[in-house]
Image 1 (cartoon, rainbow, N blue to C red):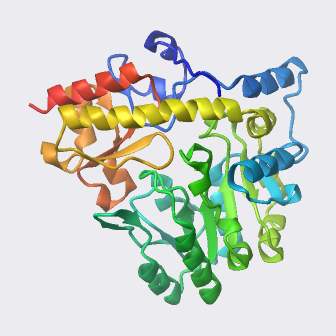
Image 2 (image 1 turned 90 degrees about the horizontal axis):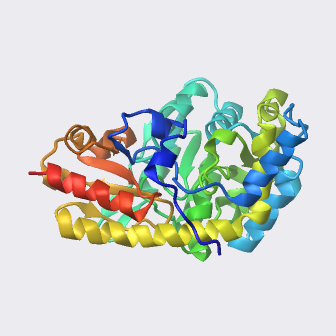
Length: 382
C-alpha cells in the first residue's frame, strides 16, 4: 500500500482544473469530485511514455484496457469479465447518452433515483428521452432503492433505468439482493439498466460491492455497465471511459453505436486507464486508507463543532452528504457556506428536491484542509 502524501494548498492552487480555478484563492474548494492527491506513478508513467513516443494520435480501439479492467474486476470483486466485452469512449456521461440512444425512441421515459448525480437529470433528455423520478427511500436504517416505485414506473412504460452503483452523493453501496430484484424487474418489463459504476474502485470494503452485470443472467441480458478509472485514480480530465456488455442482446447495443463513439477516446487516457487497472491497486489502497481516516475525522469534527448536522458515513468514495437544515441556512446552505465561511460545497438542490437544506462535501484532501473547512463552517453558524 502506497503511503499517501498531499501537496500543500500553495502547490494545489497551481493546478488549472475547475476545482482550483472556479473560486478566488481565499475559498476552500470542497465541491467538485476531484481529489488532492498526487497522480499514481504507474498512471503518470504510462501517459509520459506516450508523450515521449509522440504517440498522441487517434485510438485504434480499446487495446490494453479490456484485459487490464478484466484483471482488476476479478481481483477486486470476483467478477469475470471477457476483455472483448469492454469498449471505450470519452467519459461516462457520453457512455450513458450513447447507450440510451440505442434503447430509446423519442420521449421514452428513463428512471432516475434522486438524490442523485446532477447530470442524471439531463443525460436522458440529451439522448431523446424524458426523466421519471423514483426517489430513494430513507428511514432510520439509511437509504435504499424503492423497488415498488421502480416496478410502477416500469409497468407504466419506462424503457430504461439509470442506476448509480455506488450511489453518488450518498456513498451508498446497493446490496446484491436489491440489485437482483432490480434485474428481475428489468427482465419482466423489458427495461434496460445502465449501471454507472464509476465510484466502484473507491468502495471501502471491496467485497461488499456487487457489479450489476455479475448479479444474474437477467442482469446481463438487460444491463450495460459504464465506468472509468477517472474517480478512483483522479484522472477525469484524461477522457477515457468503459462500456461493458455481457450478453448478445446488450453487446448489440454497443456494436450498433457510431464508430465515432469509440474514436473519441483519448489515447493518453486509454493508456493511463490501463495502467491504473493493471498496476495502480497499491496506490488505490493508499488513497482508501487516507479517505477512511478522513471519513472518521469528518464525523468527529461535525460532532464537536456542528452537532446538529446529520452525516452518514459513506460506504464508498470521498463525498459526504450533509444535512445542514439544523443550521437554519435555508434550502441552499452551500450559498451561505460560500458567502460566510468561504467554503465551496456542492449545493444539495442540484441532486433533486430531496437535497433541500443539504450539501455535498468532498473530503478527498489533507486532514488539515478538512479541519479548516469545518472550523470555518462552525464559525459561520453564529
